[in-house]
Image 1 (spheres, helix red, strand yellow):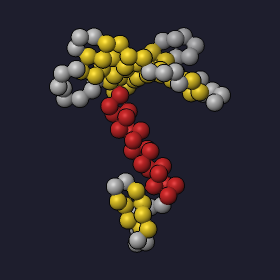
Image 2: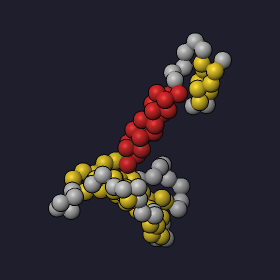
Image 3: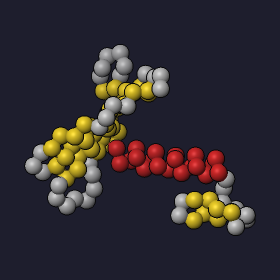
Length: 101
């Protein structure tokens, strides 16, 4: 697709963790998500998204990847409900799906 670049994810392994690097570019906006996946038990996956300046190459923003993912998931749910319909008298929500009653 023109204006979209989504290279494959790169993975670097260390004895304690796997580090995932996920770059992307959409309509002249470039970002990379970096996530550390611990090999031992952990309370979650630390992650950061860096938004880059197209002209200077400098970092424009550092975003908490967990919060960004939560926002993206919420937006996806909203878009799905917006396209399919809102649960009401003639529909019910079951497991994230809108179904006719």
